[in-house]
Amino acid sequence: MTTKACLAIAMFVILAATFASQNAPPPATGTVQGIVTREGTNDPVPDVEIQIPVRGPVSMSVEQARSLTEYVGAGNTIPQDALYQARNTLANAAQGVMPPKPTPPLRAITDASGRFSIPNVPAGETHVIAQLAGYFGPASDGNSPQVSIRHLIVAPQKTESVQLTLIPGGTISGRVTDANGKPQADAMVRLLRQTYVFGHTDYEPMPGGKSTDDRGEFRLYRVPPGEYLLAVQARSARPVSLSNDMSNGTNAVQIPILTLYPGVTDPARAVQLIVKGGDELTGISVQALMAPGARISGKVTSTLPPAVLTGARGAVRAPVATVSIMPHDAIPGSNGQYYPPVTASPEGNFEIPNIPPGTYDLIARLPAAYGWGSQNPPERATGAWAFGRNTVEVRGANVENIAIVVNGGIDVPGRVMVDGRPASPALSLTLIPDDSARLSFDEPAVNTFNQIAQYKVKIDPDGSFKFPALPEGRYRIQAALLASASLSKSAYLADVRQGNLSVYDNGLTVTTREANPLVVFINTNGGILNGSVLGQDRSPAGTDATAVLVPSDNRRQNPEMYFVARATADNHGGFALSSIPPGSYKLFAWANVKPGAYKNAEFLRQFENRGVPVTVLANAVVSAEVEFIP
Image (cartoon, rainbow, N blue to C red; front, side):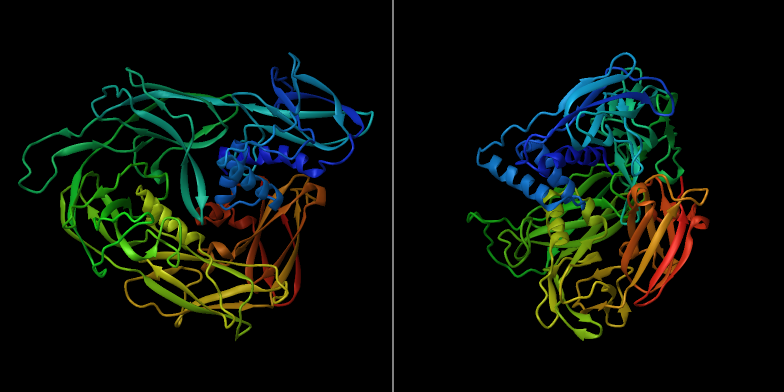
């Protein structure tokens, strides 16, 4: 979960009290007093801002509304009334109507002993929020939020006491040099935090990157506790020429590339920096790497029928291709290189300079009469695009005569079967682009592939559907059964087949050839798991935990086969999962884990012996207990 997402959650906690009861009479009040200490110690933390939200008119700022909608757009959920309020606020702001100012929270500042007191707090459920620049709250979901929050029930005419903890950020300092030990001024230094996307390892750049000074030195401060890779990108206005001899096809330039501490390019070989509260890591020296740059050149052709194309406002769209390049196997954030798209000549010729060794995907984009647009699916797109792609390997020498053929896309038809019979259930069925297409720096291309990912295909009464004009590539199948009287609560997605091949676990590959129809199988004999998370002494867990039911080894590549529940201390660690496909699983629980980490094979491998085997039977209820992993 990103820092921005943590702030969004904290902000929503504040808003939740506002949504509760805006028309209720003023409640009786009490007093909240407390102390803020450094986590793991009794040391007080002075000058901390304390806030307690107060119910008032339903309102949120434009910035809050935008943060919440972005949070939802990243695949997270919030209550529908909050989402409606956010969208309504943004719609009003677009018309110049600004929201009323919300009721300000009650505030206090901790004194030298870390203590505070706030009188006249409305009785009932509330939250106490502590925040101080450079400090962070206790770890949650594998990350350290910028606030510390405690739930509290205030009784009328009573004084409630609360203790909150904060953790000071750390610092990392060091020096960047070149291969000859010369200081590298103006090199960008940033931290990458490991996250997980659909089971793949991702590296999210942390905010607050710094440039080295004239001595090549850097200092990163207010670093949240956690584990990081340190990345260095030397800045160079243009490649440094080593030779003017280009006759052998070898590009005679060296270009700076993203370097990970202590001086590698592969994240698997990089050394993680572990920052604990208040740590000062010094002497971090990195030699910024260079690599021979190559030129990739070729030609874009098209199978599209010739036509004069116009945009939404009648402007003619020039039939000129845009070509973007992406690392073939890189995960977003891990490569760190920026490759701007290039515009081909009217004849389709293109050239991309200064590409370091590696394997890359090239994607070409051309205007089309019919296809996906940046804002709409094919049936409504007024500025449609068609795509073509190729893969190349760069070894330091120029790569020439690369052919990219743009095609109009392939229709992928299908049918839904419920318990072996064609049906049209309440099903949200989408195809998520699951390859390098999502890494492009070509904004129209990225927006178009995002549009494909958001498209929920229409299912006809006989269960038939069709994904139209899909560009070639790999897609992950995502399905969500919606609450409906037509399906039992035990329904689940059993399989997706294309001919005799199951594509549910490994994804769908779309080529330029006609696609075989998909068959989506839904069964209604799912099982139920009633579980309990225990502490290390086999007593009910005294902390919230994330419980995860993990599929057998041969299905772990499918992120849809993991079932997750929150086991709360208030519920004595109990949880329930339903609509589980019959089969063999392992049950795990973590007290603190990054979202999606448990879908990553490498992460899960280190905890394999902590899992509890569970066999889920059709139309049956099974019980299981598992000790949480601290």
